[in-house]
Length: 178
Image 1 (spheres, one colour):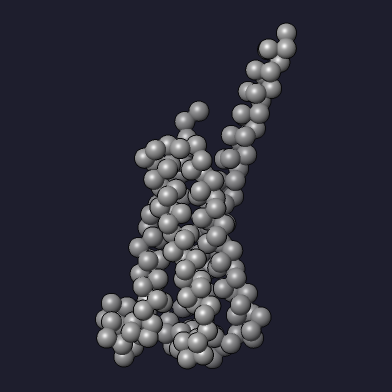
Image 2 (tube, rainbow, N blue to C red):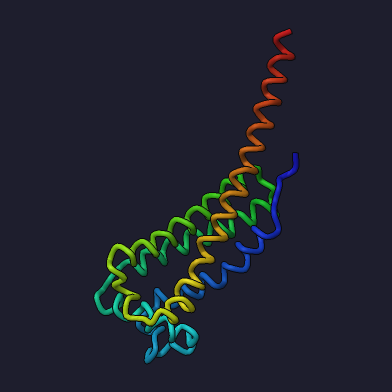
């Protein structure tokens, strides 16, 4: 059977890569990337996010932002590896790479929300409900929803392939037994 791919999954992995790498640059270049920094012009749209949840973390020397940013790099490299192995080499293991990447994104984003909850909204609690809804929940929730759907789709694709392979193995074994 040819390798099964889904355009919407490939588009998500492809279109999110530059967004994530832009975000990685912002996080790893702090404070130079922040308002007042010499490189801020590259990340001007991030000005609002800096006030929402960036300054307190940097001032305290909190390593969580850069730790999750390092995981962003790994998951995005896996996203790109999925694209390569699924569309260029048609490697049968490509769905496992995609599933791994999607589960990383999903679990890391859930961790991001859980961190806020368990620290009493220590990074975002100073914001208005409107700002939180518009700039935190509305944007970050997509990084839970889409990877959850990708994980589900790739899981069931792999389960179908394994079931098919098992049936063929059983059929082949029963033919040899006669």
